[in-house]
Length: 444
Image (cartoon, rainbow, N blue to C red; front, side, top):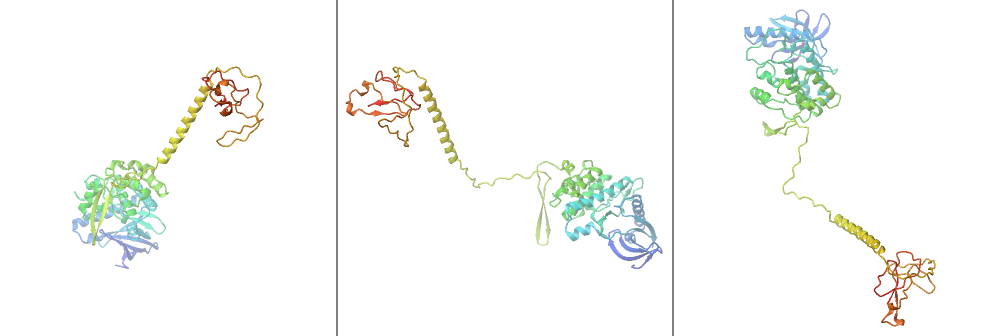
């Protein structure tokens, strides 16, 4: 069909994409001399006449839905043609690739870039919702990334227009199973929150490189969408809480479009979405294993309820516990305490002794000469020589002190004075006379 002229105006060049419903051609508008994209509905060639009429109705509805939305993030529809008994949609050509192709080629998208992509998709969805249109098929394959960094939402083929009659059979679920909201799987009427849930699943795929609910069969995937929580994203970074908020099972528990736009804008700017934290569960972590076989190996996927708190470390039984070395410090504290108590007791005893009454006789009126400095040896008394005056008390002249001994063998024992003496030492009244704190010599 390459080179075919459609409606005498659009000449087909090459195929740029295909899907279950049709394929997209690059074409040239020979009237306006511009490049366009033309979507061909190939599914109508392989169905019955009744199904063919329904598909034709759906194609026209897609064109009307896209035409009602005026936004830079929505692919513009130029015209709808009838050729070969099938409708052809002429629309804006976007030079680039889809988000699905980017994830397949690059593995995954960085969180900030994914948030920027999601922000533009959300703005397109808000414009569609304001126009009364539900997209109902938001997925990575329907998000286009242009070479000039534009983000556009396309393929309103199963969009639902407010006020139009339904084109879906009773019990039929349309859309990609991986990105169907839980309420749509249950058979409930979709709403704007359903598109937000699909956006969350799309961004999850972008940052993790895999669908959050895909299983080995469509039935298993739908069951996971309804009953299971997605595996905790490991590459989402600051986008993680936003994904958790968008993927809440109940539509009423998801953020509004305005709240989601604010969250994505903060993450796209490199900040953390503070409003998304209220949607993160704070319960205990629950782990569930999902084992899938790939080739000869097995893969275990660990899932857990999101929590902002890190798991507590559990000590290993039997592991040696290091002993605390406080013996030296305790010994030093005991010694210091004993020194303080001993010093305080000595001071108290000295003050108590100095306050006791004395029975000493009257002191000699002769004043003691002023002492001169004398070198004191460590641990010994200073020498007392003839004609030397020291701060030591004079010898006692009491005759009773030498009783029983000859004068020649009498020696004087000196006691160190704690205060500087100002008068001569007192005489002893009797051997039982107590000594005063002022040092006096004792004759022996």
